[in-house]
Figure 1 (cartoon, one colour):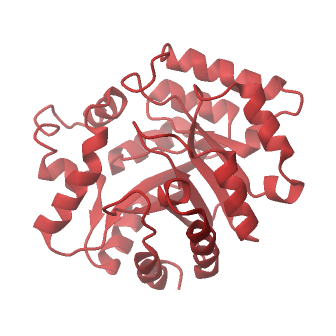
Figure 2 (figure 1 turned 90 degrees about the horizontal axis):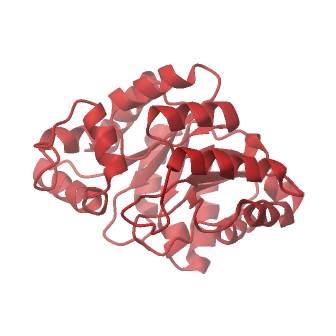
Figure 3 (figure 1 turned 60 degrees about the horizontal axis):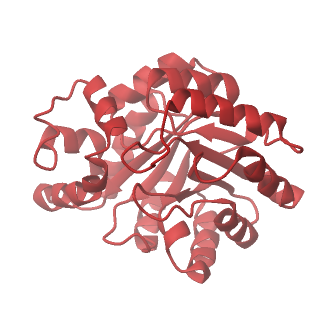
Length: 287
């Protein structure tokens, strides 16, 4: 599956107007982004599923489309595999199904996430029409889940992590599996304004143990995680500044080991397509 070097990650593909989603997807494809990521969010109504993917696939012709990420608790593996198999063959060739275990703070049935993901992958393999390993990846953050993804899927899609995490993940994966990083960016050069937007974006994730554990493994402290996040944490998790600053930061993430970077523009609302920012970044990333 060819994802390209840079993609666009947006909650608006799953939370915004479907008609605008189709138009925005077509524009992003023409700008040259390699993959469109259909985002989900913790605590929201998860709609980053194959129905949304089908609409985006129908609106585009070449770009890869990826879900980020379908919760394994939302539907049985055989049902997801069946929905994948029902898509036209040409669309399946451009679809990556991102899978995630979500969070114990959100899912009432959450238990033994590693075992649950292993069983879910078994179910995808044994379905009447399997959802193949080459068309799925895992939103992994911990080392065991990362190694499971390396063995059983295309690779991993870490979210809201710093460069140290990327480096550790690359070491765990080796050079074969895909490391498709989500990276949130803020196109604003004023530090106070950019960090305030970053803290607003980070707020829903702060209470979630899976993310907090990942940040602590990178050397941050509980003090860094207090009061909306220290400047040190914010500047490590987010990139902000002019387009050229963002491009330089993304190059560092690539140097740390990311094969592909899914760029998310921080916006005020989940249904907002940041198309002007997509164009600004395309001029420096895809020229």
